[in-house]
Image: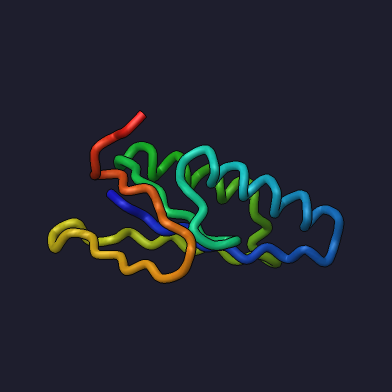
Length: 96
């Protein structure tokens, strides 16, 4: 399944800036960055639950915001891209 992870970490304090880096590292380990605080992740159910658990361990719920969007697979995934960034097509052929 394709999920979109969005976060907003309060960086007014040193600890907040550390949380921001840790949240980004967790996301980078699973998906690709498509915006500064937005990642696309192709995961199965177990990976999804693991990613959510790891992110929840990093954020401070009283200061930060985390959103996970599961895209419906029944209709297929359609993403329109504009601008210079081209995301990796997880379903396309792998070229080395």
